[in-house]
Image 1 (cartoon, rainbow, N blue to C red):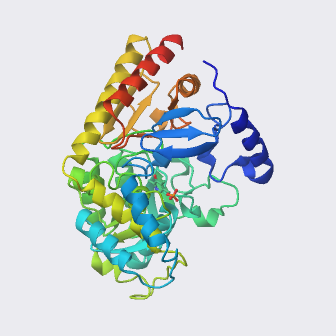
Image 2: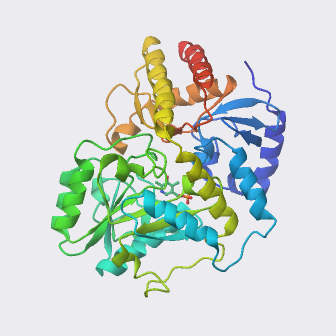
Length: 429
Ligand SMILES: *Cc1c(COP(=O)(O)O)cnc(C)c1O
């Protein structure tokens, strides 16, 4: 089935002359799967419509926020109500208190919270806070974990550069990343070695408690617990970047799901309900350092604006309904188990799984425990799978290295339709 994409192509051709690569964020381009990005016109529930009138079942969910389904009527109605009172105050609002209380109540590590406008901002701020609190400069991150595009986090994976921290992008000075140490995900021994090689110099460890940014990779049993112990033994902070996992794999995030409480946490995506929101928070004694309570400076003109806070509040209210996460898990399991079974029947080597509403499938026969493993997957095959699914009306993230997302709006029928499409595509690959 050939997809009609005339208008998408026209608009994207114009966009490429106006904006680098034609997009406002590189993940939206179809660089690794080929073809051109689809230009959207409308989103609603589990579906998206493009400018040519094609309808797709969506498993990107605007990269995570749309966990209640796109444009949920309750979120839209609440936004319309506050919209007429203005879009930004640049001054305190009641909505900030409400969302802050909800976040503090939900996320075990968070006793106080600061709102920002993106996950990137949250991660940049948390790094400054880690250093301010410990008076140490070095930080450990894991290969294949994404913490936004802050200079200090753009460090290439690989043990040879672990101590040097070679920048991943031009424009990032070596001096900026020289304090960023990297270890393979799920490798406690590597973390231990870094602490031994850098005594009293490491401010803390930051990670995605469940990886979504090199495909879906869950932590090994004992990995998060081991990091908790290692950081405590070395007077260093443990930071969970829950920008993706927060309110997605459980209402209280990965820390609630796995029962491991970090010192600090970053949030984003779901807590903004589709508007630009990020947040960081944690222990009161650490958060007390943040200006104006303390000396660590961090600010934002639009931070905590009433529209964004309202979308967050309404989204979390919807998620609080009993049975939400059971429902998400059920739908997602049906999807991923179906996909894996169909792929295997078709003779394809695949590996995948899910936790609640976050899932992933690699074209690769062995277990994927870290980024190096993920890189061995068959990316060319994924590209053909992606294209085939797109033509069948299924919108997947245009990269093997992205997790997939389901929502409360996805129905059993949507899943069955997706599996039927996958059967057709996988049998022809
Ligand atoms: C998306 C993401 C970020 C960056 O958030 P933005 O809002 O895109 O800046 C940071 N960390 C993780 C784990 C993410 O998934």
